[in-house]
Length: 414
Image (cartoon, rainbow, N blue to C red; front, side, top):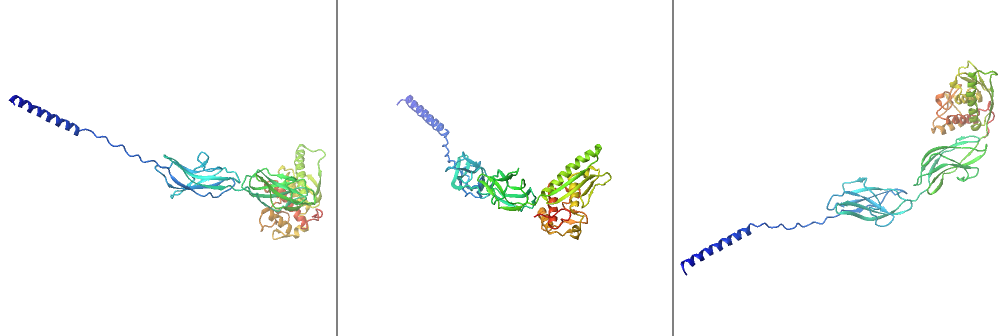
């Protein structure tokens, strides 16, 4: 080999070595691609459904227990229900109103129909979707009869009577009508005589029975109407009294002044109203004489039936008229009255019984002095809170007559 050939071979070998080194260096400096991450599947929550409790005709209490929230936080949970199996949140649903640290939660189920079978499942929602608990079943309650507290009738007159009633439960369905029905035969119904109260639902009310016949035995029942139908209370019996006969002569001036005419107008309303209460809630018989007498401070009366009213308009009213009529019948003006008062109390058993029914207090007795009695004696205008105070006044007068106050008011007629 020539010298030149040897040199050529040496250079070629050196170039190949350099190229080989460069290629390896470039390769060793190359970037590697990271592997794709392993995706963890998202999980829905895990929960169970509680048994339904506190079931009524329209509501119930459900719930569940969340044992695992899954792969993400729960954003909504509660119960869903339907009348078909496997209800979903597209049916009826309710959220949570109470939750505990153990995962138990409670929901209110509402808007039910009575006597109906329902299916319930608890649910929970997270990013993975909707999870449902196991299915439970329940049947809404049947509508029952309403229940009542019907007090004894003590406000009994000759043609009218008033009764107090309380509807204590509605049977699981709203009461649309309530009242009292009555008749002369046992077990009266709403198809006969009845009075409908203006209110609805449960609660207390007072109703007046009118168009009655005097001295007649009656049967009465409270009633209430709900979706089931008509419910009736236990039967109450009562007997009306004889109709009173309190009449009057109104003595007037032959040539009245304008002021007298105005007073006559007020007194006419008062005497007509007061005698209505006495004639319908007592059996008293009396004729009285009404007079407008200038100089009379307020009003006064005696047991002979003479009544005087002064010119003060504040006393020309029903309250004062009834009060003075009481005097004409013997309160504060008779031996019976003075002999039956002791230590400021009227000793009269029928009066005491009536007062205790009115006041719903088994300890009260009627207060009295030589002329007046209270409560319900209508001694001052402030004692009148409603027209029922006039009724109480009249039925207490009738109780006095039952106890013997009859000298100036005619015999008591049971």
